[in-house]
Image (cartoon, rainbow, N blue to C red; front, side):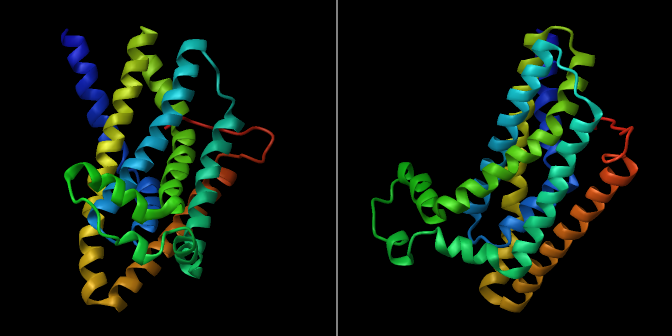
Length: 243
């Protein structure tokens, strides 16, 4: 029982801490700066966390159950994909393509603001409808890609610490739930100043959007360079340490 409680607490809170990794924060900030509303920001965090958890749970479970060995080049390639995605997100944000996609794949304002039953049960439905298909799929897909880069590292650490494979899989699930909760808290916290400045200081809000785009491109370039050069992704003997 004590071991079970320890796994529950450790997995959940390490998942919340995992949500604050720099690449996660920058990627989600790039998305949230283009979104208005605290509820929508929290939903973005939940969708990102669900995509991240899905990949970690599926890939991590396969690694734990079937003792799959991850070749260094494959591990580096998964992390390199995250760097490229950060660069792409930043460029799309800076060029305004994200705003165009959001407008194209979101419902018209008159449709989104149509009077409906205002009960608690309909709030999530209205929020999803107002976000549009693109705004809902974007954080989910980005979370899946980020989970792909981290799933091997999490699974290998769990394998070293927990001998029972089913307890290890339970830990992965709790880790994922903690990541979802942590990302929801973080995106909601990010949305507070963005929503405030968006209503009162449009120039400042634009500056925050540009800054998040530049950070995304800069960190993506740094991560890609580190993996390609220091990790030797394209060399004959790649070096990869799961982290």
